Length: 133
Image (cartoon, rainbow, N blue to C red; front, side):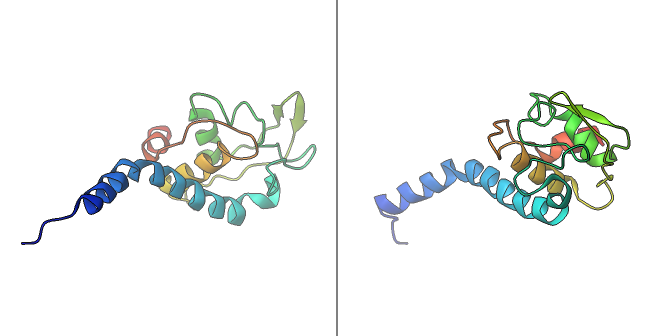
């Protein structure tokens, strides 16, 4: 059996150490694709929404709250009542994505939203989404 060189062992350790970071990065990347396909029409690709209709996701305290349960619930179950964001009211409805997107997809898109357009909030996990379901 051949021995593994020091460089190979170092590379393996480096990959293992950063595997979790890549998982979050991959979730954010997949989340961007999911966002562009399902969310950008209303919330815009820049996360700024549509005045009076669809709220911004950029700079939205509900989106970046320490506990993401509220925003997870909105994505899962939809919202059909007006909402006030940053002192402005929005009347557009939000469809329920529970039957369309998987828990993993919802976690990925929320991780993307919570870390884009100047937002700086922790990742959302599939387990967090399942807990709100």
